[in-house]
Amino acid sequence: MKLATFNMESFGGDRFDALALQPRLDALRPKILELEADILCLQEVNAQKTPASPKRQFQALDLLLSGTPYSRYHRAASERAPGKGPGDRHNLLVLSRYPIASAESLYQARANPPLWQPTTADPAFDKPQPVEFDRPVLKTEIDLGGARPLHLFVVHLRAPIAANIPGGKTDARTWKSVAAWAEGYQLSVLKQTAQALELRLAVETLFDADEEARVILTGDFNATGETGTLRLLRADPDDTGSPDLASRRLYQLDASLPLDRRRTVIHKGRSQALDHILASAALTHRTVDVRVFNEGLADEVLDADGDEQAGSFHAAMRAQFDI
Image (cartoon, rainbow, N blue to C red; front, side, top):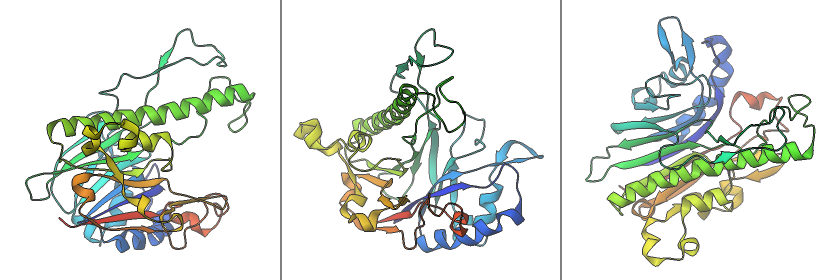
């Protein structure tokens, strides 16, 4: 089984325009085809308004997939609210050769939302406000044909870029004070770690039922392997301090690669591995190959105005399992 993840870099507009999409189709179709994935996990897929449906549709994605094996795959997509269909931007999708038994968009169901009250907001908050997620996690259960299903979580965590503080900026890019910026940055980190906690608790529910569960977390984590976010999700025995909990550890499969081979983003000349595949022990022991498709990867800042923007500034990643 080959499972791949790919951030599509905000693919598709608000309205469907096949002609305007052509440069992106030409750039992205070869990228997804070379993955030869049995399960393809996508981030940043936009959905389009259509006169015929009250819900947005993935018309741009349908055009991208037409004529490829993925057009015949089973599909699951995140929803902005239960039954409301996809959001306008940055949806999560799973395309699977195997049947998808269930799909769910996870917001805050297990962890109590943290409360936050900045000191620099103008107007000031009269009381602490709950911290809400910008987008959900997509949880799917996939029937691999054996006794145990695959529990697959597709993620796109909050980027560590300072979140907006009311009255904190002079314009869209300029902060009024370091204090306001610092509180905005702290909020973005809080959102990322809060969502990671929600995700880890969802995994714990699976392990409570079956400690040999087949679990994969994949997508754009907006975090490198040494960050607190990834440590929280992995739950290494060195961190928990309990051998009895070792079976619940998640393994970061891409960590086995040297940095030049696992980088998924280049930012101002600096290589970063922000996209990952984490797997439970039951699947880690069946991993036969991990590859990042980062040949010719463009710099998301230095190349932002060039032809490279038609593709994606993220590299795709694929893991192969002997199942």
